[in-house]
Image (cartoon, rainbow, N blue to C red):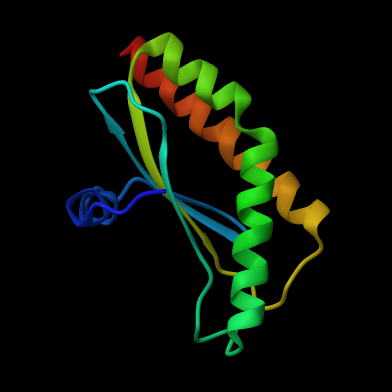
Length: 120
């Protein structure tokens, strides 16, 4: 989990962002090779009950946990670090399978970004 206020501010200042509905992903690449730092978020404005927000965040965390192996291998191969934010921007709670597929797409897009950055 990411707790550093400085890194969190940098994630949103960098403007590295893409949207895969119902997810929004912001990221920054770091020079040091550490495990990825990540934040999961669900908006209080759309989901008034804490139970719903917590459920969404648990589903996001579980989908990430099950599918992060390839991302970890890519980061290790290129010897860089990654800090990123995944926010749920949907209006309703979707089934876990849909969220998991979107997390897979987001992780594969991050892998492509890392591969392309290393080539430049």
